[in-house]
Image (cartoon, rainbow, N blue to C red; front, side, top):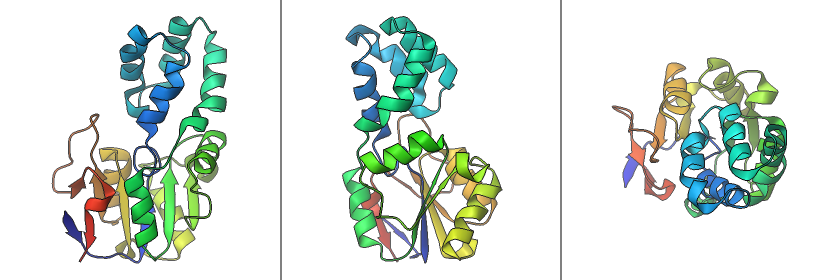
Length: 203
């Protein structure tokens, strides 16, 4: 358990923070790829941070699909497997202030994830890089999120799983941050880190 000063606004990453993207990816890929090839596909995906073209090529080779068909399957079918994390459900229910999702990705895919994860209506605003025109860690997407919530950086807290996109990006504009651990990245130095969002306690 870590104690964090309670912010007025929560800024929240989507993939592998509010939703279990890794489990969703493995479920999607398992429908296309033989079990013995799954470890290689998961490695190329790298928790969602691997180059997408390399992923589509790897899935195509393993499944017999064309690269275009593998990409379309990802964009069309992947979101159906996305579910919110139980600890994220608890955090959203417990935090009474404004909540803003700040996520990189295509509008089509990220909006579908929100629907399938049951997050529509449970947050106040959504800032998607494809809509904002800037990707984390670009300061512009964080400023857009703060503008949506009508607050300054000192009034917000960013929670995310990427040490650069989420944590360094937020800190760069003066937003305190909490890192969500995964197998893909080491904990950033000097930043509170949790495995579960329910480990956060408000001071």
